[in-house]
Image (cartoon, rainbow, N blue to C red):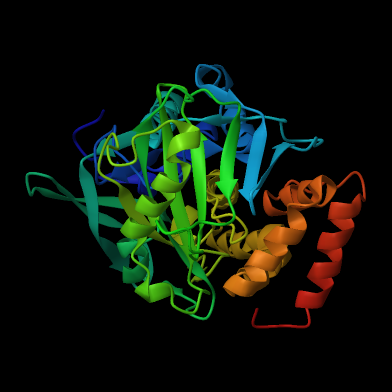
Length: 418
């Protein structure tokens, strides 16, 4: 860990989480001088993210972390539960992505990726917070960073990547904002000890109930960690009418009691205090690019509204940003940065639009219960749903899931504000 900030760097990355560390790795691999500043010190906890889907596994393998990943708990797919039924759904086959996932605690995963970036040549400054952008004639030229002891240093950079997460103070200082009409989510989770810690499926509950058995809004998840514990959490979308009145701590407590007997946990005795957070979704934060900066990962709202998944999109957007900045640095052409938002729109635009519309639909509990009832009666239908919701659609074939998604995409093109 480098303790003394450099005065100059090619690219300054604000935030050392999934997006920031991945961007640092790829820029260093391109041969550029890159500095990552991370407010906290590793290892540290984060909400969600332990369950790595095939998209995330693919990105981690591209970063050379496949062997390290193999030491963690590998799982086959998703067990969907609802209406008294359960379906175990294998991850679908795909021409690019593997047919398995891993569960890795965020405190271990994020440190692994950040260390990997450092090994590739990036400078990693832990315990350094970017407190203000350095501006020169309207261009962001770095940041003032502060250590935990209160010392401040200026780091000058040709370009800046904003990767400081869902609340993104640095992004807001540059004028980024969330499209408030689009959905966002909240999530809360913690760990419980259980003998079922190595279950081969992650689990998703489509019908969370209170302690009296009454339906509650939101969805639940269980990620077997393989270390004696499971990650149990609940999420809730802002499209639910009474969203702001829901106490997520009570929601998590109710869900823990709902699954306690089956998962053999003591619901009143979690391993640690629950962590929670708000999550902008569907690309809802922008602008994604300025004259000398790019915004990636959660800071750009790059989270899938279908399932609340963000870590794979953090890795993917970081790699795209690194490739764009590499082109800008090599060609000494800052206008190249404007390729980045177009690249995001080409990659995720239609998909996120369909997902945002879906989030509005399932915000109506009666409709959600009916969809769950119908879905849980058909394995084939739920397999299509899994392929769509996990964004594992194939380009090399036109199966039912691909055709259903394309039909939905055509419909939402007629809804410009979706």
